[in-house]
Image 1: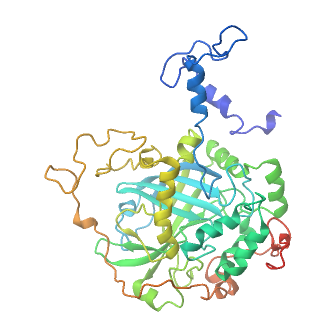
Image 2: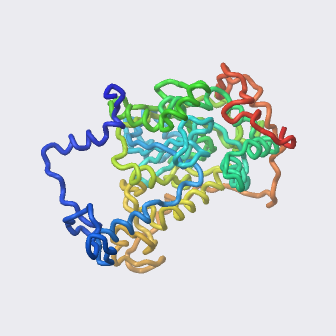
Image 3: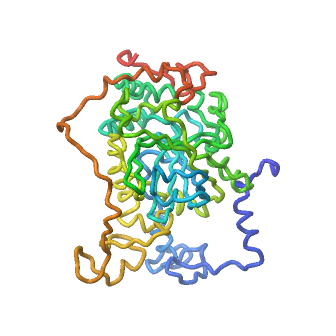
Length: 476
């Protein structure tokens, strides 16, 4: 058995070795009181009832009863790692954000990879998009790029997102995954076709997290120091090369090693084999956007690499595993509205919806002060505002500084240079139906002009989530 052990299975042994000759710490309660006996309840006689005064027991059990926080409603199963982003090419002509201010600049990052639909105990190798979210701890606050391993998504209107996710989860009566729900929604919303085609290509089963690309997917707006604006898409291409699993390999791993992707990432970093990705942008001018053949803010479509070539920016490297999974991965919270000056949202309807949804769910899962949790804290800048109090306030609550604005007491002031760029909005307000926009052309076009969809395997109609599992004639 010894030859099958790796860095994940040897973690406890490694932890002990790292302590060297240090003696074990004194066991304590949560309040720091030393404990003399951790194996036996305090009872009235050897067979008698336990006592309420047994604080060793009540302290332990009361905390145990509250160990679990709400699971993420999507992207529940994931892996995380830490490293840095280094600028390798000058893009200041497009963006004034300090994260890009000069070649050679490095910025600490945290990355979380994930599946989308499964619960926290689900298998890593299911046919499912993969989350690829990056948190840049910049000099101007955190920048969260909440991406996936696909450049497109199933829908383009955020109002559909809850229903879409419900179809990917469990049947409300049987509590089982339901192919009828999945394919019914996909068949009724033709804009799903592009992402479904990607999902059922070879890239729908990536070999772990190190061998897949990442994409910001949404369209963003970049602003330079002169106030010039362009639209932008972010790409991060794996330096390890694309590598995918066959259906047979994925199904085998799901039953024998369901945490395959988590272990692969942890072991690679622990062995000094640091994964990296090359970071690119695509740029579209406002004039090009107005004349473009389709909506450039449509998340179900890509921009042609021929018309809008990839522009190299930098490199992301992951070189540290989490010290504690719960503290640094389960509590790691990404928010697409976290954008430093120079990066702004576009009219992308899905992005606009996520700007609200993500911080809202973090406040539900982690509390109003989730940004004070160390892994989420913008530690490279100083937070100075008028937000106060709330559960689990971890720092000095900004001391005696005024908690209202404006004021006359030298408290934090706004800086005009950080005002967002202006943009015009003039159309009529309505609920516009986008379902009938062209949902087919990009799927049928040669992949050379955009993202390649490898097709060594035929579109699977029977296995691992294929339409062959549907039983309802109304869907088929």
